[in-house]
Length: 79
Image (cartoon, rainbow, N blue to C red):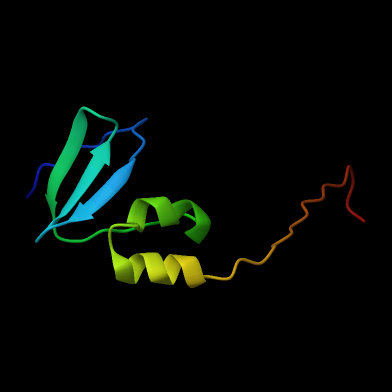
């Protein structure tokens, strides 16, 4: 199996693709050699991260955002 390192509390500030993906976290911390990149945040927040990739930047810029509302209710007794 592979050893996997998990870095919590780390904000990725930029991503780069030059044969493989690299992640920049601040000025002094970088992670290199990834085969794939998963961006799991809303498109407007992802846009600065994926700006180095014209395809990803175009997809993020063209994404339409719509509101989603939800309500959670609780009752003291069954109705």
